[in-house]
Length: 154
Image (cartoon, rainbow, N blue to C red; front, side):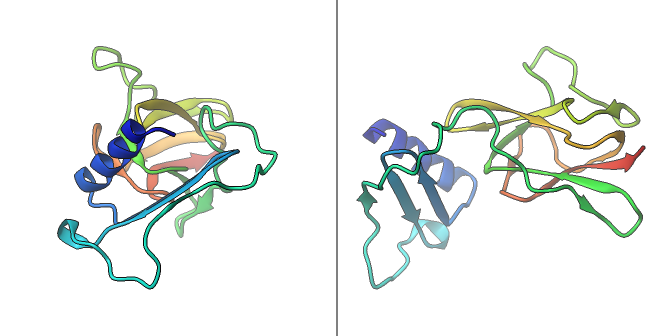
């Protein structure tokens, strides 16, 4: 990871009011913290860039695995964000959204894109059913685990 990537992460943190960020890859680990309004968070240890032992994991590409969908009280299932980034409903600004309310989805149906560090990650439904709600506005930042869609299972 070079300095340009680290600066991009810092800009993303500031833009989206993110106070903590951690990324591990095969040969490196980065952990960044900042206080609200951009101030530093007092801590015992300074933030640092530390080489990590190889974990035997493949390099990050595409969307990471999402935890099991969560059933909400009315029997619907929430599709949650597997990462921090910017939510997009379509593959490009001119294109139609991947899915509309009432649209049927399957396990491999792409429902949106989340942009993280200038990488477009396709997010799959991983559930069968019909979309009942879109919970995030196009182009808005999302957090890890934030509900994106609600699905009525079929």
